[in-house]
Length: 435
Image (cartoon, rainbow, N blue to C red):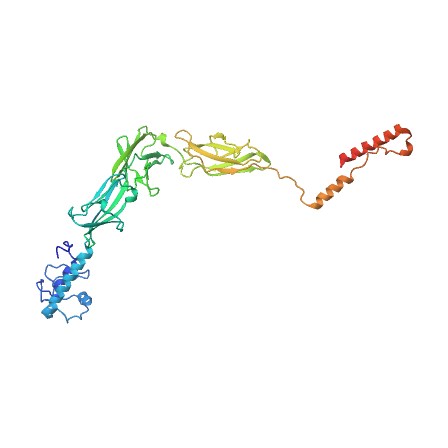
């Protein structure tokens, strides 16, 4: 049996306690139907040594109380019970014994060797990758599995079976990845003067788990960087002393199974002050002013004390048809009127913020769009209005009162006829102009 099954872990305490109760041969307290003097409590109900046949034992065995004790059992029945118990112990050991397994990390491009646990080199074994038999003989060196120049696609679970019996002997989970490169670390105070936060990330993925450790030192004092719930790669530090000229030193170390790397930042308290962008930016036209836009915004909600630490603002705007921005810096207030907008052109507008004395400008706010006010054109909308207007224009034409229409009878000679025709042409041209 020891050759087929490795030594199992010890059976549970309850199983050991049942042996004397059932009265097997060679068991302590045989024939007495009681637990041995050194057996501890069986349950929370307080079964102590010396108590005969506890009620829960009868319930589990389905035997009426008082009808079954170790002294009353016949020897054949007792022997059969011991055989059953031995079988239970073997099954328990089989179910709770697992093959050797572990995780193996390897670099991209490396040659990988996997052993079949404690099996000899010349043992007959079969390897599988992710549950499929796709490992040909070229990958085997005796019982060892050899993978050349591994890549990310070869990560997975590899299993080794003994001979043709397919008895699982060993499992390994291969994780192919890379050691970490120097991490990117950034520290910033967006809620001055409460404190600052540091965030980090790797420039390239490693494809395996990474572990980060950050330390913050102010002069000679270690400071606590409290981890944020979200985002996960961020922690914050509370200022213990304001307006300090002593520099802060932050060191971030990243480690994984294939290597480690680190980076360090050293800075003054004032250098990392950078507010969040202004919020609730609104731009709207000014009625009856075709070249004006009214812009308003609010202080960033993360800035804790704008009265004691006021912000100044930077406004930029441009029409969509142009690429060049126009800028206005404002020392106070949270609104501004643009007075040089192009009439009827849509504008894009953004605002940034900065502490009046220290730090750097925030990122730009979310862009908003607006178009200056334009007068509504007056259009003719009905056919009746168009007909009425045309008739009025035509009938309103009358010959000037000082103009005399040519009378052929009053004219004598060819010269008079020429004057008559000339006057007619003038009257006709004049009427065409008014039509």
